[in-house]
Length: 253
Image 1 (cartoon, rainbow, N blue to C red):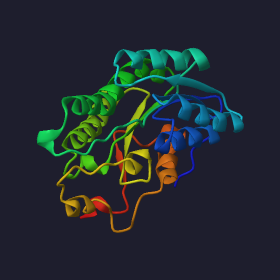
Image 2: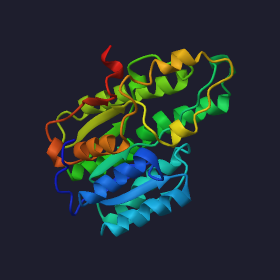
Image 3: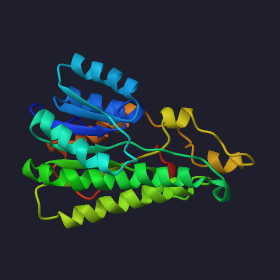
């Protein structure tokens, strides 16, 4: 993985930071020298992440809020700026995944998938962009291989990840002449809380799900986190409007 540039004196906001890829991303940014505002609905998990960030000598701001509530997004950005006096990077890592036979998916699960995976990144970008423009900052959105290939029993999830990927490109074009970089990372399957708590719907054809598991096994969480940190840093100054797939070849063919 590329090595992030020096981020000393800079500040980043990372969602989904209580565990998994979000925590790994927050720690990667802290190792690179950034102060980090960490966001998640899981307050206990955030405390553990915060302890690790402080151990690296960096400052941390904890925001234990639900990203499914749209009004929280602007408040989170304001809290990060108030805590650190600036914002240099927004990393939209948080995501939810519900497996379901499509006719049986509860409306509440569908709506939460849209709210967390697609609406929250939009509203966070909306609030963060004015601050990022002041600092020649960066946005990194975490999408998925599900943005590029249809995956059985996760139609809502696929829709949000495809939408977020295209949102990344649309924002990149909107700000093509402005001092901000906007990119995405699309991981394959990783051993995170989402994977560990996955519940296969009754009657599902498991062979369809296995098609997306990858012949080379799961992707390492830290590898993806380091790529996100790289894209958040000046080392990736030539990257804008790109989506970097890290999937051990799942989407190759």
